[in-house]
Image 1 (cartoon, each protein chain N blue to C red):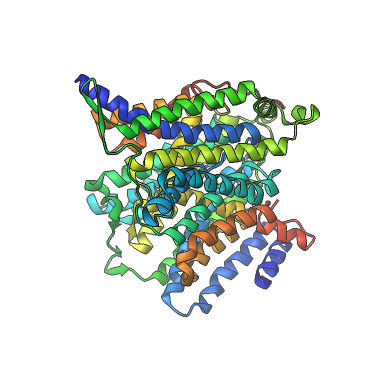
Image 2: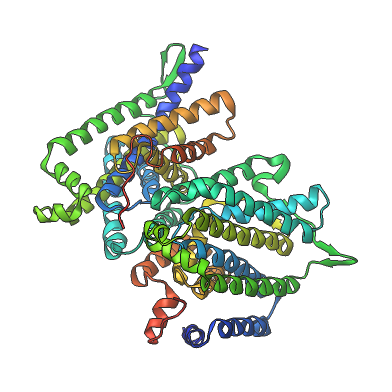
Length: 323
Length: 293
């Protein structure tokens, strides 16, 4: 609690670059407190969720377009990168950006018809998209290994095998900083303002000259690319992926993280991703009651802090964060 | 050929009936509150699991008593869910409410997982494992129970919404909650009854289909999502649209499973709904709402 409040108070102090410096400092200092590789593993998982959430927050938090299917893009990035390197021998460093580009283009193409829908209809469409992806991954066993998952050999760089989770921690941390920097820049640009404008009223935004379908398609594609890259890193670091990582519940978890942290706040998305990813991993003791606990936490947070943790705590300190 | 066709039609209608019951619950709650209750599928699970627990596992009650007790318990769970989780957060945004109902769904599933376990539950068909021969297809007697009950429920709902004062109050609230309040309708009661009715419909569906499909603590997720798809197919906010949407969905699934590929049966529902939404954003029988600035 104490660290959380000082953190949000500190974040609210700085300008965008100042906040980025604080985030970097935390990411550099944090590993000093890790007693064993398990903590690095949890931190990598947190970082990857955070990357997805930073993108999803732009889409759902700023532009107001709910997605219940983003785990699908994460899985496309993961499986795409894995299969390209296993089946065709493409090096991961090339496979990951190639797949991310493909996923981005794909998302851009489907964005226009899908994002015409609003509210629950949009939720249904994105949900359907994610489920179709996860069903294909489950069924095409010859390609994906089916429900048992897909093992991926460690990435090689010359003679070295990059299997150490500590190494991937630094890569994921670096990319997370880049993602946050991109997102914060976008938010404070004309493109970001047009996203916020179409959030409050699409017709008003269009009247003011915002190309609404284009803006929505771009932010949808951008969030899909971030999810796809996070998926690729997941495969590199964990060397194993199952269709469950593409499932409906994963998509719900991503949405929950950004709402829990505070919709429309990039740092809220980070806090939400950190708490909701790390907690179930670290408190394995009550695994049996995991679902009961998650259900209660979800309902209670939404009732008592409907705006999410970071904005609520920031208000407690009399300052506004990330808005 | 004809026998195949009849067989697929029968299994499609049986499947569709459960989607229809779940979907009508979605529509009733949406009408009263503009909320999509993602916990809807869990009441199907509760109905089946509780009946199996009361009748098969413990033998506490005979089947004709276990069924109403299970449905009543699921209904109470629905009311409690509304009181504890939905009512305190009613002014929240769309994403928040979606997460609350998903939280409720995870919670209900978790409670059943911890108390009743992860194994499959079943109880015998109401009139034994007999089959009826129609046009060369052999149809399980339980399917007739499912379809017959669906017809009766649909008729009762129609009577309730069209002929009773409270049903009319619910329709008025769906039109405009504020105007309904102005003419003296207690909209909170309407909401409460909507959640109770939706939970009861779901539980009834679970009770009817468990002898055919078995049940388990986690069947509610997929059923809920498909019920949601059925509601969307018929156009949100019309229980009878959801009824039609559910039956169409069941038929399409059964025919795809029969003639094309059984592996992709589950994907069809979502492919269908994506296509429909792109062509007709308001669903098959729905209207598109106008936007105001």
